Image (cartoon, rainbow, N blue to C red):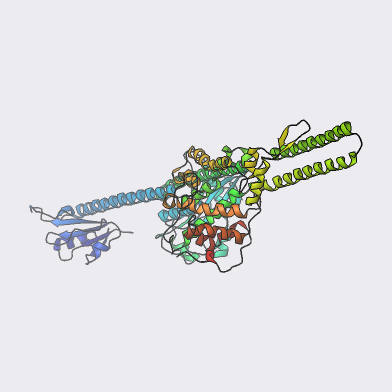
Length: 640
């Protein structure tokens, strides 16, 4: 194709020069828009009197035909000066030089543009953490810079037994629509992608249907036959890491004159598709290298994420193994917490209409919820699993003590009978023995009743005041044995424990349990969290705080409590109420649990806006508990 030369028809010198070079170049008169429309290196021949504005198009070079005796001045944007009337050889050399300079400038501009594109692609690849989006970006950008109509991406995967396979991970085609499904192929040289992945060499085919003689691979034409497509030129490049490992292959198909062009038929593909050139090989090779690093990093990130996920799961399992009765609590709380956070993220009105959580923040919240009870490893196990007010051994000691008191009373009254016989003989002994037996039976019945009261008071239910008073009297009531020693059924310390008005824990034990939040923070704060997870210790620490300052461990209020912790608080309370695995209480029905949460909301202890979302989005159903029957009530009305 001959290169373009325009001339100023109003200049006699330019017209004459154009005539001399017309047989070598594509010569034409200069039109109004010829300069601005030039898409390839172009020369414009002008005379001294020609008025031509400096070209804004980098493809144009201006050659002036001037009087050899003239002193000028001449426009600064003119590339060269040639004496008017110069011969053919001089004119051709001047035009050739001008075109060569324009071509060099175009090449520099193209290289600069391609380098900028590769840099931009590299930045985008390094920033993309979604594996699917990463592969889409790699293939799309590879096709863009090589003007490919279609393309495929293959990855080398390793099975658990060490066998390597080729995974057909992605395919794109601008000219035909098709449904794509990931498949796995044997990693052999029988396929083009497998051949490139194994050899690590670039493969450039001018016509895919005519592979080189002796090639071990064959082109699978099934797609072309089904879709009415023509795979012609093909460029396949290996994706190699800096360590020399080939982790995949990038297959580019049908190089087009314009990336935006659509190949509407196999015949059109035959006509317009061109082979990939050396420049395409370099571009695709460079991008494939960047892609290999990005994919390797993505795999490393995913493996680290899975490793950390496994560590978290194992940690939760270890924590809950210390208290098997609460097994599953942390996982349920995490599910409820993430569910409520998702509801916050999707709401567009109300107090949280403008609140949104990123993917990292959602993951951070999930990990904080999973690890919120991590500090229980620092709580004594006998306190952690305490189901009754008294520990099992303590209640057994009381039972033994009661039996001992009974034996003492029986010996005492047996001694009374013997003393009566020795002092008074058998006269009226039967009547006196019957009286002694009645007194003993009354004492034994009182002891049995006291033991029953103790067993009842040992339950972690709410204790009536009269029972508390009776327990306190038991600590003062003593019984005399046969040796004259007096014994009580329970000690003052045991009475204080049994008189706990609610629950099973003493004030000291409650402090120990509550200390698990501080332990959680101390343990989690020692982990060198990455930037996106650095708030996990703070979020986990605050899940027992209440808006009115009545929570623990620090009694902070409202705005001092992170939103994520307020979300977790509702999830934690709900699961603690509805869980059926607590030995110290029965599971509360969902309806009653929501009523209790509603009461906490009215008291200003939990976030009303979050509770409304908890109800409205039915987050509580995430734990697979049957939902409550709708009814009128305060907890069904959104906060004002």
